[in-house]
Amino acid sequence: MRGPMLAGMAGLLIAAGPAPAPSAEAARYASCLGLAATDPVRAVETASVWRIEGGGPPARHCLGVAYARQGKFLAATDALEAAARDAQAAGSALAGTIYGQAGNAALAADDAARALDLLNSALSLNPGPAAQGALLVDRARASVALGKTTEARADLDTAVTIAPNDADAWLLRATLARRETRNADAEAAIATAAKLAPDSAEVALEQGNIAAIQGKGDEARAAWTRAVTLAKDSDAGRTAAAALKSNGM
Image 1 (cartoon, rainbow, N blue to C red):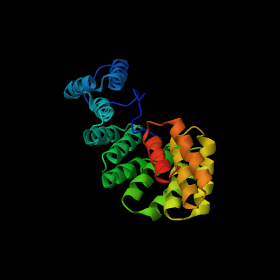
Image 2 (cartoon, rainbow, N blue to C red):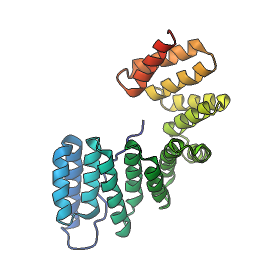
Image 3 (cartoon, rainbow, N blue to C red):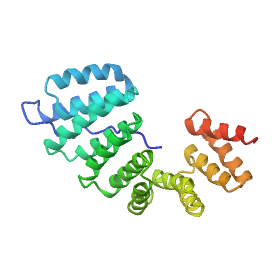
Image 4 (cartoon, one colour):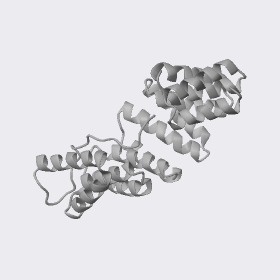
């Protein structure tokens, strides 16, 4: 459910050196991020020129967002990591947020090891509770991909404690519990996720998965059908449709 890129960060501090007035820089930053959302190819060109002109972290950040919008996640990771490091060197409080975005881009690029390093960097900068919870969920995803389930479980336990309204945390906690055949924990976690995100196809899919492994065919069918109804063209919807077909439902 959680997307890899966040916008609306025009308050990012610029790197040391000659630069336009803060208001002009902020406007240019906001304009570049807006362009990344509507025309990412052009935004790459705009951000690249701005970076050469000394745009610093904002230019690199916009470049990373634009690459991510195009699905070029490796390039996005490179640009976002550079932006985060520059922002950290400039003393920006938003360095941690950009490290987190870089970690998400690395996950999307199927580089879990790099994602783990970037998310560790983000967490080392002492984010607030909500941001920390989201970062822990993302780090758990990376840990699961690397086979580090003990570490993932610890992160998710912490995430649901400090950010109890994060549906993604409960969903991933349920998925991990199902994979480890901790059925009671899986049921409890997915029930909470469903309360927090009742219209999520991802949650409905996992409800069906958890019901299925316990032999609860009617519940599994109902949950998978709901996932298809909610978002039939999404990954979750297609997976649920395949589950229904393979189980003769």
